[in-house]
Image (cartoon, rainbow, N blue to C red):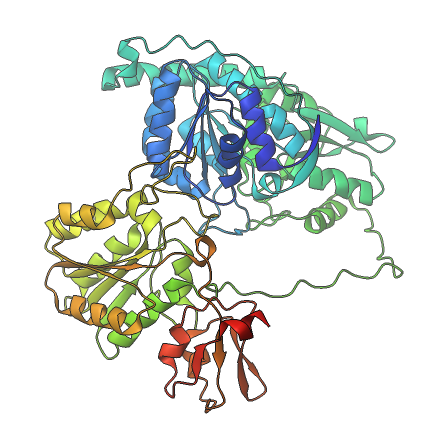
Length: 608
């Protein structure tokens, strides 16, 4: 059956087709939909979970692979940082069932803190990596990744990028599923890592990887394609991989198919040296088109040095290709035109240029309870010496004007620990550390324990909106439901805080402005660790309360705009208005208005 699928959906269905038995992960754009697809389409014998963080997800998947089950773990590139501790050891220990670690890279970055290239991590961890170039290829390749994992007894990395994850394609899903007979867990000394065993494992890996590289030289998805009348004998050739292979192919077509040949590398590590050496025969120059790191370029430089090949290697290191950011059709076409010394086609005057996309700065949604939480602390701490340490999530947007509240943001869970460090550097500066409910479970708890243990003055502000909002409203341990839809016991954030030694805990609705301000004022006076849980559901998981309206007694002071920055409130000339299509009736603006000009619209007026 042919289906129009997003790349992530194609990967998820491909994993089911390959016989995956256990799937774990932590939500992170652009990887999230892979696990969600499997959860929706899974056969009854496939187990799926959102784990509390990527480290836990990888360890659960590894345990399943020890039994002979095929296991998949999903995350984004920064999530691999969290999972790297067990993965580095697992590379030595190995697996029995096939295990694929899907890490979605985000060139740009479009929705991440960093640009990271998982191909470079693969070299560091000495693990094979697969780099799909289209959603169609990803659908097939995920199964082949499982095969290679089992063949060599090793976890393998699978690296789609944003443009593969979120592109759509028509894919022939044949509906078959491979049956995997899992032996079960068998006691074996190999599952216990010791230094002596690690030494032997390291030696095995160093001997194995060249063998995998030779195997990859015959892998069907590492392909050579010739362009132009005499591309087979071209002196200037191209090496590429991932989505850039499609950019190169489309650019060459647009440039009139000049003479060249292209090697598409689907397995950048271990590098298929034999294939690359054969491809370079007769070439004088090779251009590497890739993102983000010069992985292929460095591999070719090493190959040319080892084999004494008289070939000039060009790419990011030579400045021919941009060193940072994602490539595009247009940027690759310009690079190839210069490299191949051909003229770019003139613009078609009859073809109007596409309109520029409207600029939409990131902003907290209208009615978002985080806006109320930030505003309450801001009002309460006016004139006080504080630091407002933030974290990863929607609430990172608290740094935007006019709230201007998130003063630090490093990585998941770091707000609590950064706040402690700032306080230790300036003991008279009180730290408020803002963290979301999902992030609290992810990596927030150890930081709280550290603050309690070391007697740090700190206020932990948990912004509990009952979901993992930024990545698409996935469940977490505090929501009372699992990814497979089972009802689960809700893990209580207040009880966790109490259990680790936090004695001063306040639970407040941030949309009750006076109570929210009073809570912050009280927390500031507490010695040691205090906690405020500002609890109010995300507007995407609850019904709107109604719609606010501005009365005739408005004095046009515009405080509702300048203090809150709510996208539902706007100026029409000198008049302030509320957009009823955006307003959720949270009522925060009414509590901020100094003259009481804002109130809830009556139901009959709203319905009219």
